[in-house]
Length: 170
Image 1 (tube, rainbow, N blue to C red):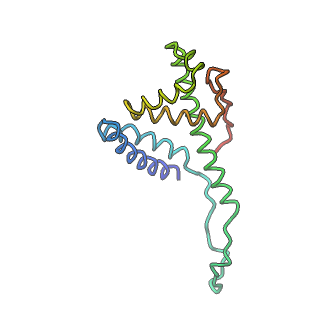
Image 2: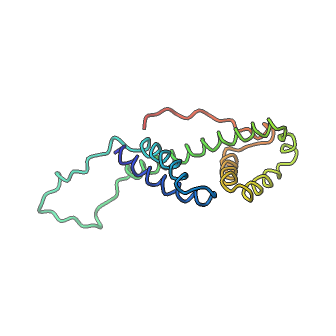
Image 3: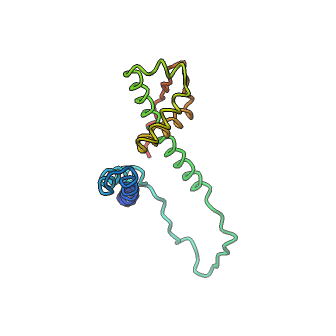
């Protein structure tokens, strides 16, 4: 199932890459070359190994099932919900790391004291980056949303305290 996940992830990555390559002003093939392998790795890592057997040996051939009597499995819905929460948690964690990297860059170019005094400049930076370099602007806005989700504060120079992720096996 992991191989199928890698194939699906590669397909989605190539599709996104073709779109992003054209939108960013680069070549569509270059975008596909970048995003295809990234999608394949993510699809491979998210592929499930332990899929329950969906055998129907327990049903008699004489019984007719009424569709109204079939109840969805609560455990499958719980697995789906927890998987979606894990995916969004991982995305927020990665975006938070990117936000911290951006804040370190602002400190390196000595822009951080002005940002601490006037936080509205983050909106100006976001709008300017969206206007002049859309891919960078999109990344900046996504990392800003993740930072807001994590509760970023000016007292720590807008650096997010990142907690380690649990190492439970998938």
